[in-house]
Length: 255
Ligand SMILES: Nc1ncnc2c1ncn2[C@@H]1O[C@H](COP(=O)(O)OP(=O)(O)OP(=O)(O)O)[C@@H](O)[C@H]1O
Ligand SMILES: [Mg+2]
Image (tube, rainbow, N blue to C red):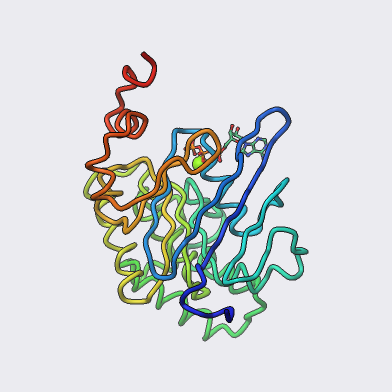
């Protein structure tokens, strides 16, 4: 099958293991991310979601297993070959991770500088385009300290999409946001999927958002994929582990 075939998952993870000392965080993760879908990744805190996504971006090398991006195994790729892979994948890090000493425009343009783009007109145009997309037009010269939590997330999202990735990974995009602002982030995530064909991988603890945006859900437990399915399938699941995660009631699973 050719690399760009629609039948090849955008990301295919097989037998992924990662440990830190005695902490065996990932214990054989197998999963596919399909092109064009919004996939929500759930687990208890410390379940290995952020570590898993870092592997997908080639930011970590696994102890064992493979990660293929568009049919190319990146699991032991050298740093200097990872550029084209990272270009496909935008990342919105946990806590927005903006540079406090840079303006909004400088923060957003950062990945373009890394790519060696220097033409000031092109930089300005691309920053202004993505600020329009995230509904923050004209905010180029603000400093991060002048922004609300929701605005910071939008700037982080603008930075994640400025290099036109085919996939965006969001690590806790709803954390610390009120329900209305969280809902506006959900609308943006779906807009990127529908208007720009972007594949979304969303790590979140916000179940209301999961049911609003997910095409598919993966629930991790004990370092593996415990369950996967659609939101409708999750809502009717009788699995006690899943039910206790969704309701926050662990009396049944710890009985
Ligand atoms: N660089 C690292 N060195 C050592 N341990 C790490 C490192 N990164 C992650 N861990 C450990 O791996 C485990 C999984 O962490 P991870 O951040 O992936 O969890 P998570 O599912 O994203 O949790 P949360 O929902 O709280 O963000 C944790 O026990 C964490 O302490
Ligand atoms: Mg995390």
